[in-house]
Image (tube, helix red, strand yellow):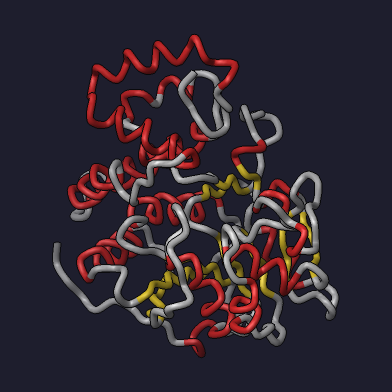
Length: 338
């Protein structure tokens, strides 16, 4: 793979553009590529993609793969290197890279979107640009509804899903950002520090958009092709790219939420076929099957199962067929083995 200089962000060059930001580390490279393709493939408006990364968590080789692939896809983009911070913790499957959204919002004071890389974009996602542009002056952050809108008081929240909003999709108006470091420090030991910090800071100054702009998979069992969301967010430690593709038919047969990710992936790979980056992208796909760190606890049971299927190969069908007996006890949105 030829190496060229990556395009680092020049803030002045973004003036007047629709900006989408996201962050990546070495464990999320393949997920980011499919994510970026889905944004481009479904967008009705032009946008500029800012890929942020903590300087010690994205290798030069992977940064070059991202650059060359986005160039091939003709996605306007730049990179934003950020310094690591000891306050940015690893909490379960949440890596320090997740905290870059605080640094990005400080660096880019004009309107922009943050969209987690473990999402897939569908038609209409870019309506968010206009929604953010039209919010009242008192609004400091645009977030998606959460079915029931959760609890705005973080001190009474027991689990993260009870928080007022999920910070996976954020619309930032042009306004002064709130200082976050002191709030983060004051929260102490909470399950997902990044989510709690955002909720503590912004729950009282929000504008909400429909849940379809950040639909979490644990709230969705099956895709309704007549009423598709705009952004699907693959919550939890296990992601679609962890599932060996021989088993994906079990999901796509009943339109589980992961099926739309696999559909986007198929279109993405087809668009690269015969290109200079194709072999490197396929290598990244294979590496993604075992990306991330496993912890032996309940909230990692899904990724442990998918890792087991990876190592068993065709023998994994015995587990898949055996799981049918437990079908009623397996949440469809998070475990696509039905």
